[in-house]
Length: 458
Image 1: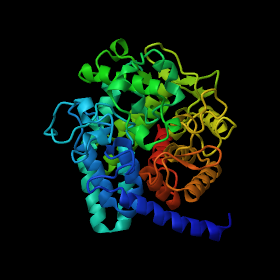
Image 2 (image 1 turned 120 degrees about the vertical axis):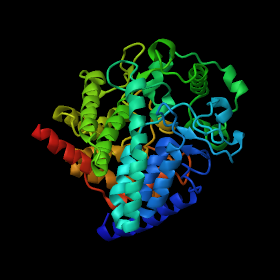
Image 3 (image 1 turned 90 degrees about the vertical axis):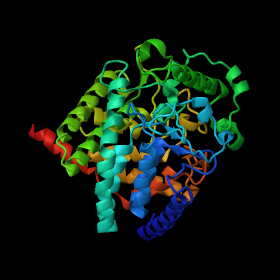
Image 4 (image 1 turned 30 degrees about the vertical axis):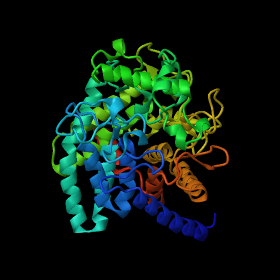
């Protein structure tokens, strides 16, 4: 594409992306979309903040505050915070299904008991580092917001690193596929096979998603029944994380989730430095420890790839999911792993932009949610990894491909892996938000470069 044509594309895309974020703003937070997702989602809020850093940082901070105001006393940040003004039947499963007890005066706004990948420290750092461009008042607000968020972000990390270390390996376990963010990835198929599918649950509870979405794009009924059964089990156990591997039906170490956990520690090191907190070194050590655990527990030398591990059975999933590429974002990842992941990302299995699952795999489905389509958010993370390790040519190729994909097809939730057509919900917030960041062409993450230099000195 000629440079002048790309500039024109960029200007159009910037306006449309900013418009999507504006229309999805509720006054307290940004909804993922106005069709299927009427409440506040956890890692969606983080991705939205990254884009809002360029066009409205005050909204970015307000959204993060709204989410962390619903943080549980144990440190978990719920994957959905429900809007009390939205009817119960507008989204399922809603607050009555979750039955989360009131805590910290939160009786008026319910939440779920699950979590999502802890993208929030990285988002807070990104909003902070762009604040100066908006003037002195915005910079001062950013410093204040970091001070408010930092102890809450630390509590989130401690919950995941301590209470969710079900395998005793230094990795956080997810207790539901929804916690991964990659809801129905083939990575969970083997572990889910051991979970009974009580189809009677679908007679009791109506699938609201099928009212507004094509059933061929969404998880199957049997998978959905398993999802509901897992929630009931976790809920009826009081959302306790004690003895998870013994009493809960799904306990999995995900490479993508734990990569984001480590990345959060690196962002916290940067935030601690700004706040003058001496914990910066401890955050970097934790990131190194998580990186070492990922390579020890989730790398399969036979496949040359990172796979999810079922803590209950001890087995690695055979699936090649995009989550197995995400450890590329870790600056302390050794060169042989980096080379293998770049080779996989650019191979016929994936290709850039990468789909959610191996294009040559037996479970590949070009339209069904995380089993084949292309998602902007994981490719955004993949691009950061390429930049972290100096793979600028591949990062630039991926950036341009993602921008052309969105410009040509719209700000959809996800995209067809072959023809690029938009799938899922239109006017999707994280697609718009990350398009703004891609248009800005942010350089390699500053925290990663600092971390690498300090590692070389020790």
